[in-house]
Image (cartoon, rainbow over all chains, first blue to last red; front, side, top):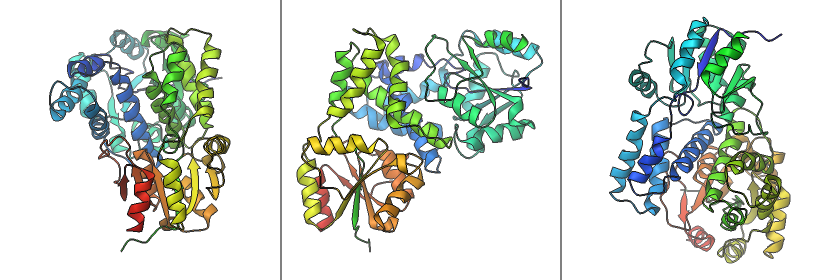
Length: 224
Length: 224
């Protein structure tokens, strides 16, 4: 019999925030909009490489560092510094996905404690929820910057469980990224994978406990 | 005073092999050729995520797993299985970069021991060097599949040093990927970063000992 979670811990970037406007930022400085996906995958690749090597750098520093290696080969309409600034500042203007406000309230109404755990900075999480009118919904906004290694290192999830004062097995991690689901599962959490576009889950990672197309669907699945 | 290396250890994929024909494979199944770069960055992202989480899966399995999540949203000209097979088999037909044969011979003539260390399989390395007429140039073809974790985890480099019977400080790692340079540097190796297109090295990683535009240039730098 599966134990019900008492704490739901959310990934932030792309799970709660909608990253699709980042493609516009790339287009606005003169590159193909598809470069946004390559940039974000490369940012995570480099951040995880540092984690695997036992090191850690801030998310924004890695994001900017990757941009500075990618942009010089593009036909930019402005200086490299200005293009980097324009793309990076896009992170501070993102909206939340359409299903997030109602989904969070349904989970809150079900009596669950809600927290976040991001590889980015707490300040970016705070600004996102303020813009979306969701400040006060979360009990804690956590960042791996205070844990040491980035997710999906086991220490990052153990840090969140420790801050919440519950065993890892009482926590459920919600993420759009399969690598986060896999890491959380290995650390003993239950998991919910959001697939808003209906794609397939990769076989090289541990499978999620729940697969959902929106946060409201998670509230329904947990209630049943 | 810097100690001269006795063993040069080469990364294989993209460092010795030329991955650019992989873009043709993507185009041949009906996707934009630029998808090849996103696929390779995502493959490494997922492989490093597993490494950071304390796990490991074979390179080809992760590569195929990522493909199966990326290709269904494309306008393929054949079945998903056939498209995956066509792209993945491209790995077994790659050439080496133009500077590799002369560069390797110059390093060999300088009395250096030459080995490889790949996140892929030893079989793919063997086939690559057979096709290029470079079999017999390397003393050992090593894979992280026998080490445990993928590069850039420190254990992978320690495994190579152990197999070569030298301290890590006597080894020099050659790679086109900054994450490999960074991990090797943290593990105590000296490093040479090949930048064939003259790009910039990212500031979030430890800097290479040598920056070279070809393997022949490395032989010249080590001799001076």
